Length: 455
Ligand code: SF4
Ligand code: SF4
Image 1 (spheres, rainbow, N blue to C red):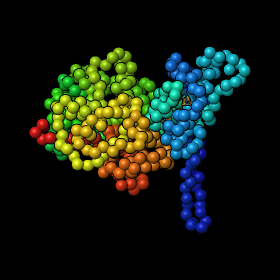
Image 2 (image 1 turned 90 degrees about the vertical axis):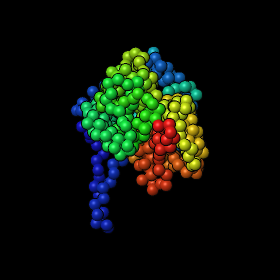
Image 3 (image 1 turned 90 degrees about the horizontal axis):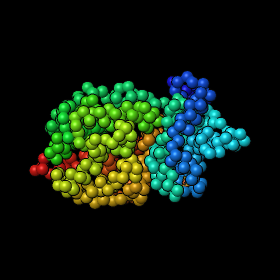
Image 4 (image 1 turned 120 degrees about the vertical axis):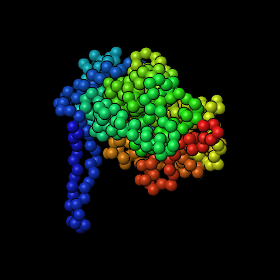
């Protein structure tokens, strides 16, 4: 169930004689029919339960220097103190001090930390979801090493349990849990689209092999919006001589369980892919151009599995760099200049910053770095599930202007990334601002320029 705190305010304009519909200034969404007290209890319980000793140490070590504010694109474009990263954790901090800190008893006795109200939690829905892409720029910059982005993800667990998730994000996460894909890509749809790409691009695509060294997965955004990326992947893996396959029982790389804050759904989504890889005896899992899939499976996959994964996990940009560096595939030189947008979850939070640059080096393009770029790159504004939340659009477009300025300053011919979610955010921004730059894909650039005699 979704409710609006402030409803649409219809206004009849006497002068224009038209009905104008005023957008709600703030809207909070709720799921389920819990009483307000129960929501607060659930949120508090999970905020406290999810505190590891690391999170507690983080909350105790903040020296309130405010440096993280300047790192956050939301604070940068608004100057509003409520968008300071550490402020986004305030309810989390209050719950910790009141319920789990060494002085919790005294805080409660002396009333120094008040119990949260449902109104406060509703307000924080905007701060934890609409205005945080979990980009990790604040974590990188904090002099005390506080990983604010990871704690925001933990805070989302409590919000999910309290039924306080933006409804679009909740809906796509639920769809992914029930149907296996946030965009309704069933195994049959996936197989059909692969067959279409196989014909369209005249490339052999392996599906449902019972044994393979390499399992390749895709994101629903690619399957539905950029299907050519499936053909590009097949073309490259065939050229590299891999024993590989797609599987219809484990193809979806996105993880909206993680983005929405539902840890159980996160595990289910990861396990579909892990089970498929184990079943075929894969030695390597190649993740697609999707930033958060890299976080979910490369860095959190073993936690979901409960033990080390029996296969290597690599992002497609790492795979491309590895195969080009080893000479397994070769590419023709491309006479153009490129500005590369680092997906936050692949570069800053994933550590694979150099891979794309190696690939562009093999392509011989003139690389024009944005300022800043690499680990310090500004986020596109669409990560962390934000791109699904429509009420966040205006703020997202403000943030996107930072990227536009960065790209324009490079004066590069082309703009390239290695994340379909970033690409979709750029496509949307391009349409909104009638912008001249079209975002391209690193994977597709390699596939288009493969040396024929190496295929
Ligand atoms: S930069 Fe770190 S220490 Fe400074 S206010 Fe932010 S979280 Fe606290
Ligand atoms: S993770 Fe990114 S968006 Fe979220 S508070 Fe930190 S800098 Fe801002």
